[in-house]
Length: 311
Image (tube, rainbow, N blue to C red; front, top):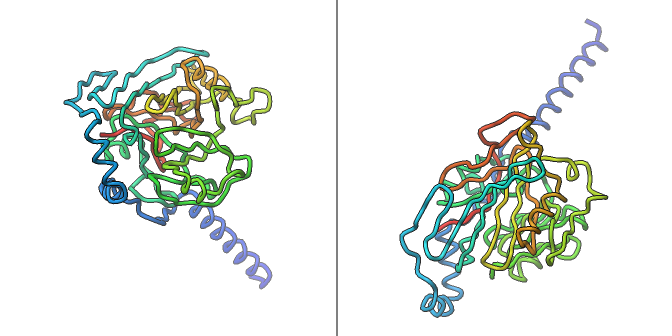
């Protein structure tokens, strides 16, 4: 074999294995960066910082009772959840209306309780491990290297995606706002009281007005797809929404259609989360929608995080 041919063969092999490693590193090889604090640790820290306030609030706060649970509802006196199925835009839309007097029961959780790359679990598995009563998939932060990540008051990623990236901020008092990453650093949001920051988008509704633009949406947003969204009617009154799609039975929604639908339900703030095959809603341990990918029904896609209501 000629030396030039041998060198060419070796170079081709090196290029192949390097490319394979890059692909595996990007999409397969898990890398754990940080373990999320347990719920007990987070609660202990919060109680230490504001013990007096907590005791005062506890004296007047409603006391949960034994939950009353049906196939479509949950009520324990503090947290009330009601599931409704709508049919709009040739699509089945699952809506969970949540009313709670304790906004701390709105939470997020990471797959395997770990912040990292390619660390994933199914929505139902993360929900079960965290005692979630109701859960939807989050922003799948692990599929990207940029975009703010704050979970449970902990800042995990401060790298900005772009100045125009719209994030959802859930504040400690239960309010929701849509902000541009160019207007705040992640550290500033944390200092202002952000409990959760989700970076996917786009924003759908802000201050009671649709901000999803039907004329300038990029192809991914304008096309009809399975969708997941979270919305606020007022602090303590929320909507979790999952729309099926990409099948003969369900066309799916554009982000503008999703915004129109949420506005009709009274949402004043609404945000689009990861959709497509990730779109999943879990209630009392059961997946209530029909996850699909490439036009085919699937069990569930493994993702990196959820948003949920717990005990």
